Amino acid sequence: MLQQIQKFFSNDIAIDLGTANTLVYVAGQGIVIREPSVVAVKHLPNGEMKVLAVGTEAKTMLGRTPGSIQAIRPMKDGVIANFDVTSEMIRSFIKKVQKQAGVLKFRPRVIVGVPSGITQVEKRAVKEAAESAGAREVYLVEEPMAAAIGAGLPITEPSGNMIIDIGGGTTEVAVISLAGVVYSNSTRVGGDIMDETIIQYIKKRYNLLIGERTAEQIKITIGSAFPVDENKTMDVKGRDLLTGIPKTLVLSNEEIRESLADVCEQVVLAAKNALEDTPPELAADIVDKGIVLAGGGSLLRGLDILLRERTGLPIIYAEDPLSCVALGVGKMLDNIDLLRTIAVD
Image: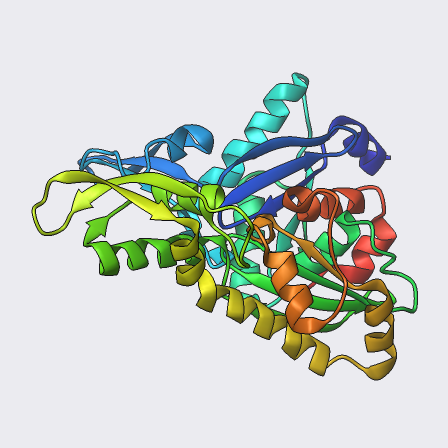
C-alpha cells in the first residue's frame, strides 16, 4: 500500500548524466530539463564551497570567472570526476523537477544512464550521488542499451542491433540482441575531444589561443568529417600567444576537417572492431539493418558518410540523436520488468 502511495505522489525520474549535457525525463511528462553539465561554485574563506549556478547559467561563466568563482564540469569522459559537485548538480536538477510539480512529493525512483565501460567504483559514485540528492531507489542502465531503446530498436527480439552513441566524453559502440549486450566497447573519444583537438590545432598552427566555447562553435558551424560540397569559413577571435593581443582569424572548413581527421578515425576504428567481434548471425542482421547513430557528437557534418564509406554498411540516424539516452531511460520508468533485466549492478 505504501509503495502505491509513493508511486502516486513521487515524480519518478530518469537522468542522462552526460559529460556535456544532463537531460532529465519525468514519468508522464517527457524530457523537462536539458542543460549543460556545468556547476559554478564560490570558494569561501573557511574552505567550504557554495554553489552559485547550475546548468545553462553556469555555462555562460566558463572561462569568464574571477579567482574566487570556478565554473566546473564535474563529469569527465562520461564518468564522475568531482563527486561533491556532481551530487550538487543532481540534487539541483531533482529539486527543479519537484518545484515544477508544485505539490508534496516522496523521494523519487531514479534511473541513470552510465557508460558501458564504467568501473564498480564509478557505479557506486553515481548511485551515492543520486541517493544523496534524494532518490529512494537508484537503477543504472548502460548508455548504449538506453540509446537503443530511445532510438526505437527492437532490442528484445533475437536479432542484431548495432548502435554507436557519440557523447561529449565517450563513444559507445554496442551490439544488442534479446535485451542483452552481445558486444560493447567504450572509447574515450567524443565532442569534448573534438573541441580540444580544434583548440590545439589553432594554437599550434596560428599561435592563437581560443576557449572551449569558441572551439565548440567552430565545430558546429564549419566542422566536418567528410568533404562537403560548399567551402565555408568562419571568423575566430582569440589571443595571440606571441604578442598577447586579441586578434581575429579566418578559418576554413577544410582546415577543421583536417584537424578532426584523427578523432573521426578513432570512431571508425571502434565501429570496425565491433563488426569484427560480432557473431556471424548477428553480423548478417546488421548488414540488413545498418548501424544506428546517436548522441550529440554524431551530428558532426559528414560523419555518417565517412562511416558508410569505410564500413560499406547503411548508416541511419536515430530520430532524435541528442535525446536518445534520456528517452531510453525514460521508457524504463514504465517497464520495471525490463529495467530489472537490463540494469547493471
